Length: 194
Length: 194
DNA sequence: CAACTCAATTGGTCGGCGTACAATAGCCGG
DNA sequence: CCGGCTATTGTACGCCGACCAATTGAGTTG
Image (cartoon, rainbow over all chains, first blue to last red; front, side, top):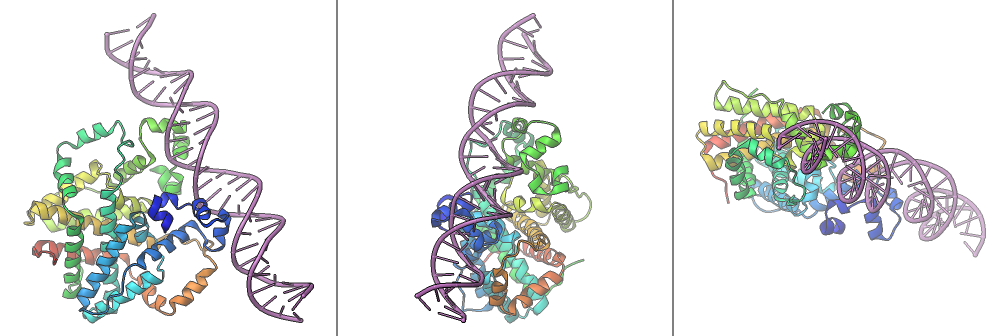
């Protein structure tokens, strides 16, 4: 985690981690099956920073869990892309999942629909974090290619219309509005159209 | 794209692509700045398979765009994680964005809120695809570690309750229900709580 | 207290990766 | 015919994840 905070995910290689621990690279494989497994444990370590809400209504508790998860995700941008794809379901992910599930049942959502609701909330929270981190980072101008000019020309002035408000608006809106809409829909009990 | 379909994203290395083209590895850098740029073009090539809806109401057109995008995403699972994080905004992504924006305005959503709505829809569509592909793939049992047993034990019987319905239910529900809720919320005009 | 056991660690190595650098080949307008 | 430029090439550097056989060392047992 220290290595990740200092120099990003690229710095988290088996060799660098081993160096940091004063250990040979191969030794890590005695504790972790894979590099993917190591990243999985990093993800769960990140989720350890999300507190468990106790007081408040069901909606407030869910909002707190999602907001705090989002905060932790944005604090570790390099892990975000993996959080959605790799469902490692470590102990902390499980803890937050249980919290959300019981809150949903408290809201009158029955078991099967509650699981779907949890998944929708996860997709929105992690997805919006991924969207925001992707828009924020990568400020390296040296990697830009010569054809960048051609491409911009092909897009015409439309790019400005679309991407300019995107960069001006805060990503909080995307998260907060989507969260409110999803929670509204969840308790409305309406079923999906075919 | 052929290399991606045949052997997955790992096969899409500068060297393998060059081999397939009968060319030296470095030659590619004359046409593409980076490997990331190459993946960006792959993403837009994938989105080329999403047709442009013409007839139907605004809601039906949006649903078609999102459903077709989802179909294309699920057909190219290896690209999904990058679709959210790297907003390359190629010509096809721009085309679909414009379609959705005009449909939203048709629904009475004004400019600024329309952009937010588009982003929320993108997050849900790509995010749910990422969630589903992550759950589907990675069926390799050899990579499992010895501590897998310990971890499963620590989770107790709760893992079954949470992950068993997840794997039985179709990912279509997550996508369709979330999409319906978001569209409902979009036109309701309700503002986000602080 | 010595012998045994077994997880943890190690050196060495393999194949592959992205990409920088300098030099070359091929084409095209003047 | 030629000068310039783009596309291409050979070579090479440094890094990566992962495997193998061999060794260490701490804890348990007799």
